Length: 307
Ligand SMILES: NC(=O)C1=CN([C@@H]2O[C@H](COP(=O)(O)OP(=O)(O)OC[C@H]3O[C@@H](n4cnc5c(N)ncnc54)[C@H](OP(=O)(O)O)[C@@H]3O)[C@@H](O)[C@H]2O)C=CC1
Ligand SMILES: O=C(O)C(=O)Cc1c[nH]c2ccccc12
Image (cartoon, rainbow, N blue to C red):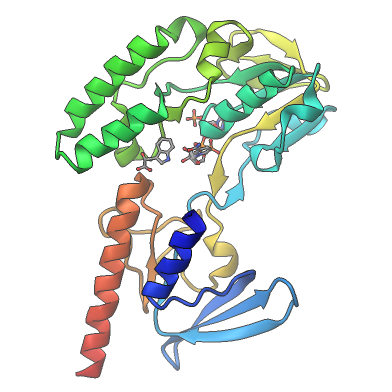
């Protein structure tokens, strides 16, 4: 059904997707006032050259795996992978595994590991909102369709979640002061959509640690001096933008970290017909805003050209 929706969307708007294609580079040709994009067909390895007046970068905030520098990580003798390389808990039955990072990836992976019989621990460094998918859906619907105030909806969500999950603070999981929807729209920090991890944490099946100090050959030292041995670690520590890897002269639009130079709400328009959608770190709502702003701007620019 979802694939049908995507196909009919492409039909309706006459979009011709180039599947299995990777952008190798995009360079602005100042003489011709156009972007030259080299793309590689991933099946045949053939390279094609595309030229365009407008280039919309929508390659994502979550593009490449990011593992933070942790003292001693290179000395660790067990397996250390990023969450993007994690497939299943099947290989970890009976092993002692540490998940670093308590975003949605870390929380889902910890659940999967524990249900496959791994001795599972998770590092939860900052406060997080544990929610259910129903609560998030109701919350978003109340704000979007009923026009209710975000702060009001946030307090309802926090009350309902506290009632549903009970007090998780004694297990090392604190709630942020700002409500879940406001937090998402201002900082892009997502609420956790719980898949059952909270119950396992409360039951003591999954252990929580507050922060990593140092990694040794077979063990990890945590804030507060606790130490534990592990066979494997999964770094569910998030992602980074990779725009600058292929965008060759977008310096006027993007910073070194691959995020736009200009701040919200002016971040989406770059220079020379370059735009970016989905880089505001403000969740789905701002991605829709970017798309509309960009489309209107391109239409206006084209109207001007044809005058
Ligand atoms: N089912 C779903 O809807 C799913 C949605 N997603 C979404 O995909 C996006 C990416 O998610 P995800 O891969 O979880 O990445 P996130 O960026 O959301 O989370 C990364 C986590 O790693 C923690 N972290 C980073 N460095 C360290 C460190 N040195 N020590 C301890 N903790 C650290 C961060 O903590 P801190 O906050 O302290 O920096 C943060 O909790 C998010 O928007 C997420 O909501 C992902 C999976 C499933
Ligand atoms: O991106 C947003 O605006 C949202 O808050 C919705 C949302 C999408 N995926 C999620 C995963 C966890 C929590 C909220 C979301």
